[in-house]
Length: 474
Image (cartoon, rainbow, N blue to C red; front, side):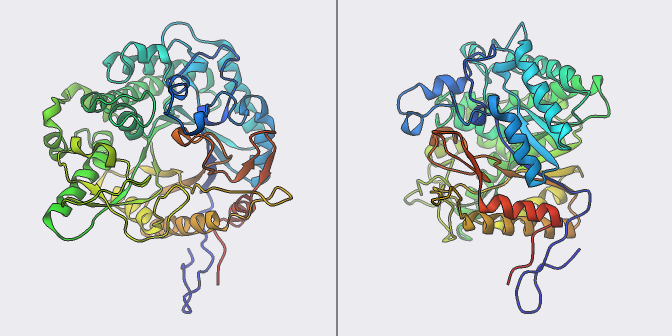
């Protein structure tokens, strides 16, 4: 592999391994639309979007970017970019509207057509079985805090696998269980909008239990498929060497990273995290941990930023880069707060720190049993206005992607088994509680007309794929 800098300090071309996968990622509720079509039932995000004040501008995913009807055009865009893999999620509500019982053949057929179109275009399909859109009837029965939901997820996963497993090799069970559990059930910032820290811990546990049960069932059907989960990881840094700041970093690292990595890869929860959360009565069963720790073939890592935290009293930084700030008391200290470190930020207010991605990758490689790693999400959201001809000159996104790909390249040179990279996102789309106010896509979407126009970053990424790595830059 080439070095990243020459002796003048300019970056040089970074060549990735020949078999490295180059992809982009999306999620069903954010792009599909057709919320009332094809037998789809309501999900918790349909309900959440209709709750006043929950989503910016009152936006919904009812239409989103109409991928349900426009997927052939979107697959052509992927082919034009040269993608070798595409990560998408399957809507549980479209496939099994009640979350139990009968499956919807029309919904399954939609994903069959999508998979066939991808394969015809030479693009490897990478489905994710759960990206936060729990069927509303299951939430009405208690949602993820209820153990039964884990078993219902395994049933759903097994049925989808039976329908697509002959054409799909790589499967992701759960995407970012941290967000679904803690933003959904503790802070109320995401669907279903509950404010119950004790329930959020059970939601996290039962998502991982469902993950393990699903893998056991799917692997029994097709042992040569590849199975894993996708977790959102952060590098975590104490603001100072003060013991209170160091302990705050330990707490946040525990709940953000180790709460998921340890059971998935080591078959146990971190003792310090169990102690931090003991007042909520969370005591996982050994039998559950044996299921959660069932061997995985791949681990998806979603990375966007670094957390800098303090444990000393002061004004908390109430920014989008501080997901714990609205519910810090339940991490065990009233003074855990997120502080800005002075780095440049994206349009989301998230500090840009590519070195943190290298740190995360090398940490997982160092501290856990070896498993093939994939960057399953990495990208930057901005407020963007196209030029008169519809193009978007998104140099900030290009700089972000370039820096993070170089961090990936350094990690591979350091021995990390990183096998692929999926940027977030292929298309501008519904960005959860931010509605349509933030854009992450390589492709600009005019939400009024659904016209798709590749941004400068799309053309840049196509060149990266064609060359097998980012180009040199003076």
